[in-house]
Length: 373
Picture 1 (spheres, rainbow, N blue to C red):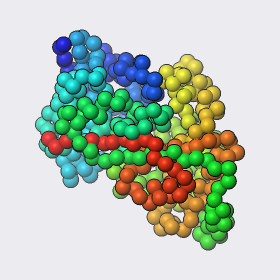
Picture 2 (cartoon, rainbow, N blue to C red; picture 1 turned 135 degrees about the vertical axis):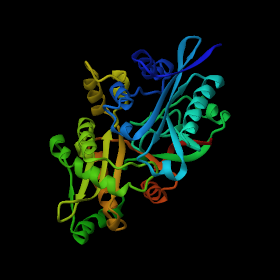
Picture 3 (cartoon, rainbow, N blue to C red; picture 1 turned 180 degrees about the horizontal axis):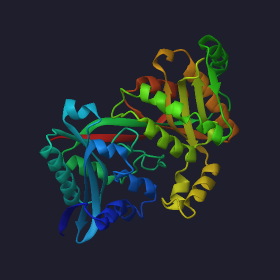
């Protein structure tokens, strides 16, 4: 068996790089294809503005002449970890179940990072924590959520054999939607509005809800700044993200709290699960992919909680309880059976305590790996 590692430099190699996951997972029943347009934009410096601040490397492996794996290495100079820890990242890693192929890809990325003065390689994690991060190590039988990795079970083993170990785990909770929210929530919610001089905004129309998305992202910039791997969004990126989120949003599952000046102090953003629609569309938006996604999303019984935050000075004042109650009411009205919490860092015990209080149980675990160079 011959293995060849090639750095992507022309359109054919780029096509092979983008096609690897579709080739390797074509018989993987649990896999949800990524949206091809977003995959293509991710490695396009004209579409991904983070590439202007990063060193990147895209590699494809060929086994006996056929694409058999890929990896992207990156050093994002927007992150403090580059200067403080001399830490590089890898993402978009795929490999056939072959130790030689996986090790060759990883070794090439390691050598590239080391040549640039890095002393550690972690992954999978992209330019920011808004990109897919971590390989699933528990919950392979569960359906993936949007923007998460759903790898084969052999991938963690290949990494460990190549010398990688745990850096950080992310937990995903399954939260049942009860017939009735806890009485405590009903007692607290009215007092929260009165005591904090805030207003809760809820929506039924996408156009109306979309006007508040920039406020949401600006508050995210403020409240997420100390999270692992977070990079603040520029105003240009906020505009782009708002347009993307408008396409997939379910307005009933967007709640935002404003103070007397009209500034956002808390929000929670969820959508009906769109993964079955993406599977039906095979990751393509055109010609009919978007319609398939919307059709399946309207029938989904799972709510995916993608983002949420409370401004620091408003924490512990009940805004989270008020928003959760509003979200539960919307979920009940729309026939949602359960919510997927999306990934929560295992170190974020405050959020986990709230999720557990709502009856949530861990049903998926993703791991970011690390290796000293």
